[in-house]
Length: 267
Image (cartoon, rainbow, N blue to C red):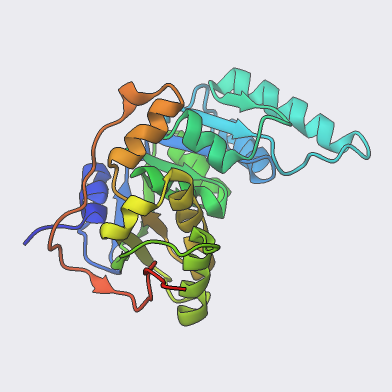
């Protein structure tokens, strides 16, 4: 029986457990993403564990939440994070560089890699064919220390996209329709795996929007194939050499989510 792309990504990083929905699995994490709120806790936890250099690569600390400089508190936190990054071998992206999710996708995203982040929208990297999961501070710290990430095996839910987006309709509208139909818990403990001919009409940042907002439905993550759209995106950022294909699996068994996908409109 053919596996889904999600099964293939999980299988490539599986350390313990069986891929049976609801059962605990342990995953090896390749990359780590930190933002500047929980990132401070992660750094303190790594210090408490006596970690000298992190194992995930790349690991990146972004400053994109605490930008207001009304007093010295945020600035002092930034200095602490910068010094912790230098000691632990973590990339530091300072205030003003950009928001973590699109920045990481542009500079470090790599199809087939796994990514853990202390931000619920770490899932946005799934747009590039990554297995990207948001987690709590201690889980991220443990993964950066080289330990597995433990979680219940999600159910795989297929979202087929067909046709083309009508004028004045964006990728955001697709995920808002999913939310309208299925609610904020409609994809809890699930991976949303996007497939179908409608993918060709969505560029990498359209896919980023869908993968990002899967979190609003409670999804563990969202997964897109790594195809020619992905290759062109990485080439535009000077990173085509890092692109590898992760095509969708044809006729793989998946639970289908009821959704009116991006259909043609005569209006």
